[in-house]
Image (tube, rainbow, N blue to C red; front, side, top):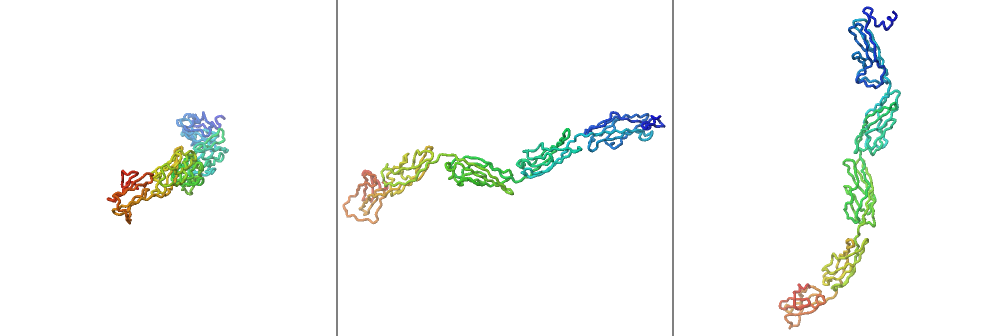
Length: 507
């Protein structure tokens, strides 16, 4: 009788109708690691229900965690999606009650299941975040702190790192505190990357280590960037003329719509160069561009933008002159000879020099009226046409003399040839019928009529007067005659057989 009346047995007796329904658990799960996945639902026990003649047995779940469980076909399950967390709920407790509503006192029987949630290392939680900074923010500037947590108790040590999206190693992170900072301001460039999506990883010191990660966005705002002036070297022939294009300077500004002004701060000997509004280096003054004097120009060039505030930058532009063939130098000179000097008469010698070659030939390319002079390849100037060497026509010749060197490059200068005026016999002819004098100079002046004629007492002149002499200075006898009937003067060059009007004679 003692066994029948113990507490366990008494609960299952119905003194009027026999034994009440009973319940027992089999195949129970008494512990689960936290973070165990409960989807699909996990079976934690089998329900062995003995009805003992009852036709209806109701099952009810009670206890502090009853809502986390469900009975399906005499099996007890953790509901789908239940989160198991040791730190917030280290133990789950549920009581399963059964009852035949037609017999005994409710409930007829019950059994309690306790499941321990064992502690495991939790993965750190990293929260996404967004920061905004200006481009080119200074190195080591703190942007913000990474928001993270770890549920493990006691608290674990967390280690922070950037594991993705950090183009150009632009940012750094304090591995202990999680402070995010600028690591390389040159990589924090709006024109290159306007927004960084950084993958932040946090590792705990549990066993095994767990890693959590999230994306932290860093947006950049645009700021005025300084122009970039790259150093460069260019080559240019010496003696290049004003306006010659030297090079497009390597100057850039990443800001959209930036307008730049340019200047040469130093090294521009003689103002040889200037920069146009398009950033092109051109020649402004050709005189300093002499290889033997200035073989290299080292220009410090500055570009200033129109930003607010305006920013500038400088660079070094080197211009090397190419040594080219220098033109010969012809010395100016002046010579003096008598007018009507005979052909072949020496006038003088043109002189000159060539710094990097020899003078191979000479020529007269201007000022040689009547082809009066000639020059040989040694620079000797002689009379070429004595009739053109006429003081009354050209008292001074300004000859443009050209010297050509062994590479075919010319150089020029002016040589002046002055003529001495010499005395010449005048020719006087008297036209008897109109009683006028006709006269002229033997060096070629036109004959003209004298308005105030003198009377000639020679009354028995023939119809034609004939005078002989060297009137044009060529050393040969010329003839002048006057037809008294027609009052015409006639001239023949060195012969009496072919007379021409004076105008045709070239006097």
